[in-house]
Image 1 (cartoon, one colour):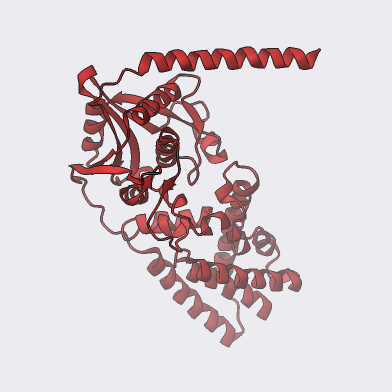
Image 2 (cartoon, helix red, strand yellow):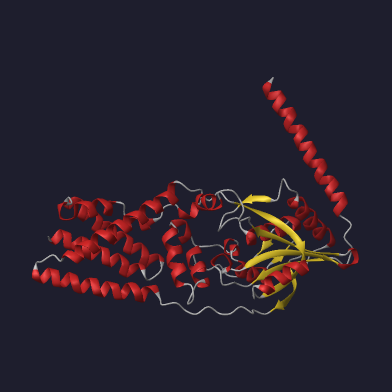
Length: 386
């Protein structure tokens, strides 16, 4: 009985949604023959969350007074427990809809460049896209669970266009061997090296996946390049009919910060000098002991945070994070025991340092991690010496 009741409820709900979709389709279908759609690509901004660019969709029908921008990259800072939900990977983004004029002014205020790729769609495909966007904009449909690599403002645009066309899209750019991590690093080169270090601390093995052409489109500038050469349908139409720059970049370029690899490289040289002095004199300096305890506890706390992001968050890209090999909670135990630490624990930690160094070098993580790991390896090595 419960089964049939559930089935009946499901049918009623599906019928309601289907009828709503049909009524929406009937309401939104009359686009004129001169209407068109385009993909908007915005350049990077100076904030971290804008440093990778942005994508949106535009529907323009001047005959009916329509010129709308659909933006899948909207989130609400006023969401209850915003930062906690963000840390857990449970923050919802939503589709917003506004006039193209407002979207243009907003990005111009931030000084971000903007370009437009007019899509080479048939009238039916354009109507499909418009109806799906309006369907997505309904209050019950506009929210989605954001995923940095697999479900963001760019991948939503990519998928909506693909569904509207209803056929396979062929990407003609050669597949490359770059990983998600490499694609992110290219956007943070020179002026955001400290942010890159933080990003490489948080990301796990999923970020070292070699991207297919479709997967590369999580990044707006990559999607723009892929769409420019893509074809679709049996007639192999070019997906983009015309590309137009709408506004140049007007943002003030950020000054390059002192590179973290230089900072930690100098710190490593200092620590190496003190370690050599201790080794020769067979003497332990009190200030160095305090330094050891501080950095061991700090690394251990970082490791605990990384474990939380691994097991306590919904982000798949923070799982299997091998940074816990060098930022190990075991270092907290070593900080407490110091010279009384079990030798097996010290040798185990040294082996973990070696494995972490291999990962950093092979997968091309931030270069600053190399001197950081060497510093910890030297100081744990001195405990073995003692």
